[in-house]
Length: 147
Image (cartoon, rainbow, N blue to C red):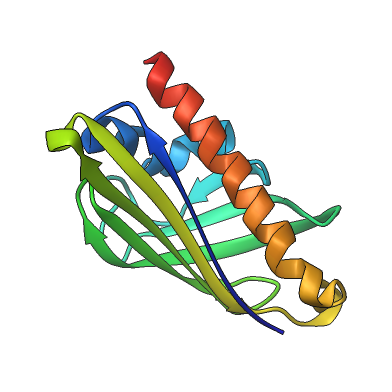
């Protein structure tokens, strides 16, 4: 089942502050609800070619997925492609400066092709993923705005 989900949330902090959390794989378990642990297969800092293995859960099942960074713009964009995952997917993190860079619109887009047990929810999968991603953005916002 084809999946293309985008969610955005405005954060009262400059893009550099948001990127400091969102673009740091070591901090993924703090704000990504389905991530329990992260292993970097390449040394920091994050950049094109970096590989990040996430261990977590989705729909009540443990999953492991390895993402490779295919595009990177500091404090603007991280575009990743799944090298290993339960289903093929691409994930983009975008940061758009607002109010002269004092605020940020943080966006996450997930594209993929759910298969196997992950395709079972059918048309409900998109809304489930969007709700999960919005929850991630709200956690990210709380972390960044608290400083």
